[in-house]
Length: 113
Image 1 (cartoon, one colour):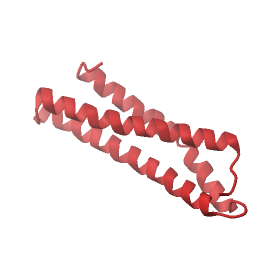
Image 2 (cartoon, one colour; image 1 turned 180 degrees about the vertical axis):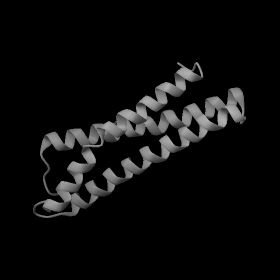
Image 3 (cartoon, helix red, strand yellow; image 1 turned 90 degrees about the vertical axis):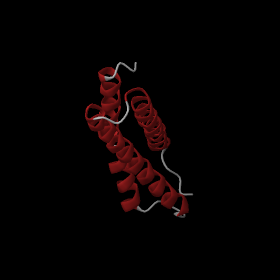
Image 4 (cartoon, rainbow, N blue to C red; image 1 turned 60 degrees about the vertical axis):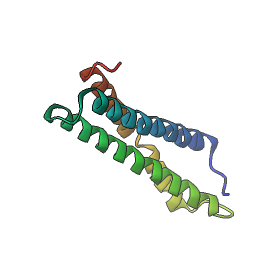
């Protein structure tokens, strides 16, 4: 594997950890809402929002995985375009923060704290 700077590796792995947490929480919240309140007009909007949150988190996680896998195959050094792609993906912290905020808002709305 071509060697990545430690700082980049740490940022990417932390983002992946957070994205896995979002996937888990979105799925768990959907289950709880369905279990407690059923599928009603009131719950459908939030259930769809949770599905979208889960889908976005999955897409970002998959993108990181794919880029890291391609970098691992690069020898002896990382192609600059691939490194740039990883850097752009790592700047998605704002998106991850927004996904986490969506989960927190849904928890508050349904008193699932």
